[in-house]
Length: 431
Image 1: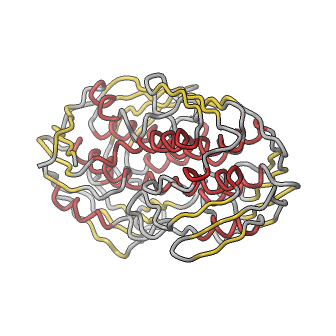
Image 2: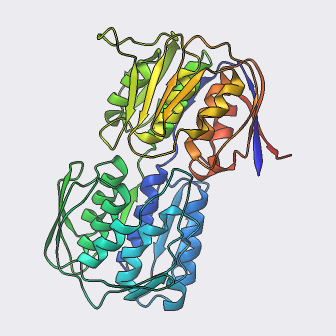
Image 3: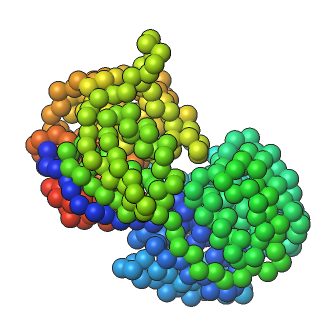
């Protein structure tokens, strides 16, 4: 494992463009299996999950042309993928579940063990994916693993989901796009990356209504064609760069075309004293007052809640916590998506942060902390590594984040970009 060494207290300044959205590129890549025609993606982030999926495509006999340097890739899949290879899903990554629908469609049969995992955010169900495929006509048998068989083109279905799962919505979208008839998903997820997948499937030939809402209607096509799509910028990374600039006393401008997705995110970071200016195609952090905006109800504590889109994203809650440790007032953080996702907060005490974990979903950060540099250990959660870095960056002196490797899974060039903005930060082999 590799550590991050951070010498904090250095203002970051400059202009930056974020990477492509990890949570968008992975389902878009998986959806390329729904056609035999070439699919080209641009603004592809050079993350390890992309590499693993492309290696899997090569094992199927697919043609892959990928340039990590310019973020462009083209894939074309064979009419008959290697069936034995199709069974060997890259289960070391959570995004493997997004391969279920397209691989089942192409191979007709799929068997796997139910141990796919990608982070430490608590138990994540595979049931919604299997139930969705079964509803569309796949037969399911279970012994030591799960075996799925799809006898032919699926028939359209109506599903009312128990909760708005992002990846289960993406599984529905992919199987519905090749189904016969008009399918409807109620309680669909509406995140920007789900919308990006829907736009891609529509360009390939499906007819889609309701993207960005909780009710998704898809008229399937008997032939999906090739497409060229730009992976949208990562709104998590946009906010992350702004947070780094603000807490270090610098000024960073992020160039991005997703400014229309940012109002609530900027409002919530604004509660923590970060100040912003917006212009067409860019957002700039201009200062940090450290003041927490108090609620009008006097007996309440300032609060930031994370829940499924269009709420404040759960994947940005750690970054907001990283900012809050330097604020003058108290803030309650409430994660309504993942259980156990705040357990890492005990590491903050090493920085001198006073915090109280109320339960597996709620964390209270007290204001007015006397911060000090420290050696902290990151769990296997990508955004928590970022949060610890945001905390360390605002503290004068040398801090070390142990086991920081997960950062590369979503932010491949983050350290290089921060260095270009003036940060004193580097990788170092673990002790």
